[in-house]
Amino acid sequence: MDKSETVDPTESASRVAPQRKFVMVIDLAKCKNARKCVEQCQKNHHLPPNQELMKVYLMQENEDETPYWMPKPCYHCDEPRCMEACQTGATYKSKDGIVLIDKELCIECKNCITSCPYSSRHFKRNQAQNEPLADPPLTGVQSTGAVMGISKCDFCESLVTQGILPYCVLACPSGTIYFGDQMANIVSNGKEEITFTDLISSRLGFRHLEHLGTNPNVYYLPPGTLG
Ligand code: SF4
Ligand code: SF4
Image (cartoon, rainbow, N blue to C red):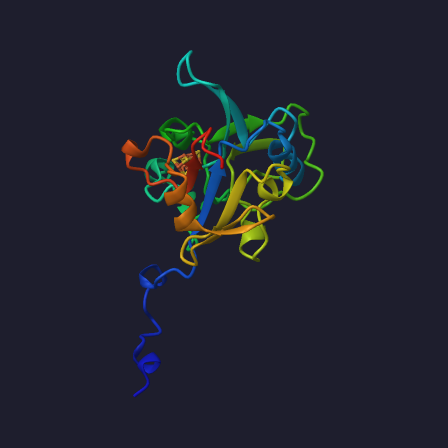
């Protein structure tokens, strides 16, 4: 008998091995704070100028070290504290590993905001009262009415599930941000494709606050290690 015939078609989807696992790698040595990632994210997610799902922070380890820029999206953790804190099931993880919000289930209790160790969630009310947003937003990013509610980076789910890179990746003139499928072991910044494990090992990649045990799916390459 062919092995495929032995598979139980009623098997729970959660027990089936995922086909993809999206991962991002941010090269801190390349970021020049051009902010194109922020601008394109805002434009394509229909955000007002004062709302950023991708932030760029100026960092300096101590006064003897050279400052550097640190882009920070949601880390789409494998052990997401936001999801643990969500009592309604509004926060969930897709089969591709993306942490999303079901607006229909969200009661705006803000437990997810206070439980995220990376401050990756935001709550916003539209200042232009009762003005609906111009275009339908991406699923899980914000509501369509005057109250925008809980929002976060969604890894541009509507793009990446079609094999298209996120807006922030394509916008960066320095090629700072790589994105890809960890299971295929390939990431791209839109200019080059690189083997994910080679990139992480050769450039000493790390994850922010690794000791928290949240297992982020966003990696960083240290500043000052280019070339
Ligand atoms: S970074 Fe914060 S909001 Fe994003 S998945 Fe992790 S715990 Fe949740
Ligand atoms: S604000 Fe919404 S997504 Fe966040 S914990 Fe409450 S119900 Fe869940």
